[in-house]
Image 1 (cartoon, rainbow, N blue to C red):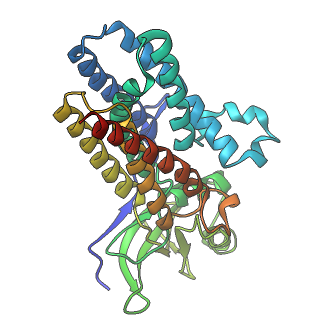
Image 2: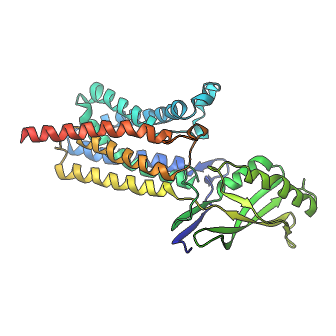
Image 3: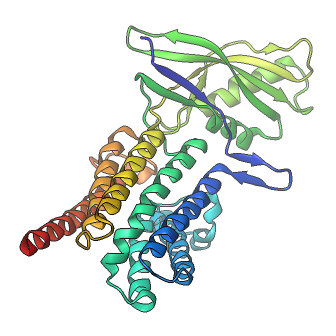
Amino acid sequence: MNTFLTLTWDLGRGLDLGFFTLRYYSLLFALGFVLGYLIMKRIFKTEGIAIEKLDTLLTYVVIATIVGARLGHVFFYQWDYYSQHPFEILKVWEGGLASHGAAISIVIAVIIFSRKILKRSPLWMLDRVVITVALAACLIRLGNFANSEIYGDVSNSSWETVFTNPVRETILRSYGEYIEEVEFIELGEEEISDTIVYPLYSLSLRFSSKVSNLDVAEDFVLNRIKPTLENRSKEDLNMVITGTKLQWDTQEKGLAFIEARGYPRRPTQIIEALAYLFIFFILARIFQTKMGKQKEGLLFGLFLVLLFGFRFGIEFLKENQVVAEQGRSLNIGQSLSIPAVLVGLYFVITALVKKNEKE
């Protein structure tokens, strides 16, 4: 089987600045707010609203997004764990954000802002905010791709990606005092059948001084690292060691190689990012064409229907994010998307009915 594009994704999780690692996800997350601010600034200026109020809106939305996304993950995805470890809820930097929680909190924040600061209908404000939220959702999914997280299931499709960084992190997290560096060298492909092809790699391991010779290193790799990779759950399996002998580098001390097989996955983060970007252009185009004169609630409703409708479908191609999703016909993300789509349909239909009545 010839794949259209097989990508080995090994970007890591951030830019090492020496004293600090700038995470790609955080960078793109922040970029979403910056671009959203610029878009809303143009809208406010066009509609004659004081720019000073935009700073207040940004504060509301930033706080709502972070708090809501975190609490959404805690309550929707891992309440069993966090109910026993409540102080870990504050560790946002360790990951664990849910878009459904962010959506709910942003709506609440916009309602408060509209009534308290803007003195306008919340739907008027929501119709404009969702344009920027769609763009931010695109950038966040790109951040997920950069971080090698929330990926699709194992596949042999025409477009697939081997995420190697989770393998590196697994090895260094478990055996960091013995392994100093982990790299991946592409070797080719292993054709299992006419429809199944796996990429092959040479797993490069740089041992610390605690591993004294080749025999000790080989035993360490085959009896410790190999089982660790193989015992990963289906959702986390990205690579297994297939070689039976460790090859020691003759020129560099402590460097050894062994063959491994990569498991290609659908890059659903990229698919989602492209879909959300398309939704952004749809909403922006409608707003621009109508010059903001469309019926209140139409853009907000379309946003909910399109974004969460797509989210419902793409989840069929993604791996479960938490153990609680195993064995469910619909995962947590899909279950939360259904009411969002229904609410969106209500606002779209209501806006269209009001338009027809006026005509």
